[in-house]
Image (tube, rainbow, N blue to C red):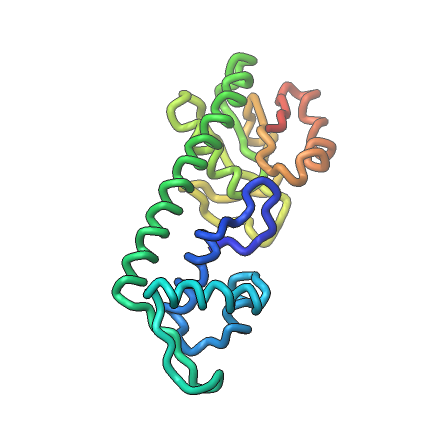
Length: 203
């Protein structure tokens, strides 16, 4: 589950409950301190969640002290965990579709500028989303490139990641920078491609 700090989508109580249930299911002998480390919460908060989950009949605690304590999900708890997981996945799909639609609208601007053959710069999760958005737009993706030599040769969605020096040889009409965090830096590095007729665009 997601542990990173999110700026726009803060974890809800139900999401935290789901994370705790999954940890308890996979590691029934974990201490509350260990669970807290895994899900990114304070031990006191984990304790509160576990008490609440137990009161609702989702969890059974066995053992006399913290050394031999075990947390067992009841049948009712298993059903609740599955219900939470399904709701989480459904909302994730909705967010994915919304993100894909936003990218598609941006890409349509580039298509109207004449984009037909493109290289995507930045082999990230965003890149995969852009590739999916380009799927039905009639645009030919020539390659994925990235400045990180550690991922050169890695295959993403059927494309082998190449170094930036391959761009000129590929002769795209556009390069789309799919790295959101380093967009300005990448643009500065490759904006010279504009001089040879390769347009460089940031998302």
